[in-house]
Length: 242
Ligand SMILES: Nc1ncnc2c1ncn2[C@@H]1O[C@H](COP(=O)(O)OP(=O)(O)OP(=O)(O)O)[C@@H](O)[C@H]1O
Image (cartoon, rainbow, N blue to C red):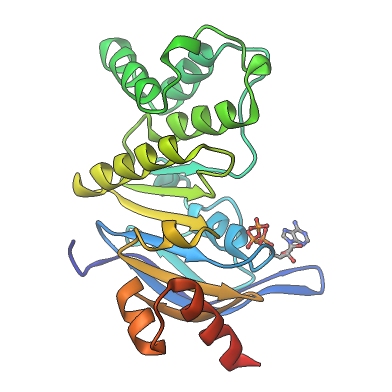
């Protein structure tokens, strides 16, 4: 992991109408790390990652990804994004969905087939590749969405709650794969409200009510608050604000 920032947010705020949901967030994500965004429902995690991915725009402040100000169509091609709600075509088969997204990413021929086989194996859906997505369960759709986001081996991978509705064994397999992808040089931003997933990140941002309440490695955050667990540390930082 190098210390070069791959993502740089400076004084970012976001409002929807009169409602301010993100308030003065500044943070850096370094190349080659898994950076977790931890916070309760409604804290603003999705809003932040959508702005990083270039899907949504900050009201104030700046976001640079790979040295380019977001949103930028050019940089979006180098980013993989897995949204919380699955962006899949229900009437198409899993294979057709993968082929569609692969061609958008410019993956063709042999390479396309190889990547589709690899990602489907990873998410344990190889036997279901010819089913239409409408026949998939919620968990299967999540896994297929993850497979889609991994297809083109992006430089930056942004995952919004990737393991919701996924059983513990597969969750572990997915985290193992994220670690492998990271070691190959991909920078990963992942939102979660699961404390044991937060422990697997190199660094974490703790978010509450649209504000950053702490940033650091899981170890640092526990040490700073004299906590045994990330959950205790989170409560400590959250509690200190009240
Ligand atoms: N398009 C929108 N219009 C108005 N308010 C919005 C919009 N999108 C998000 N919000 C509000 O912004 C706040 C933060 O939402 P966000 O989805 O970013 O939280 P989150 O931390 O990702 O929560 P969850 O874990 O439940 O997904 C919430 O109060 C939400 O209601």
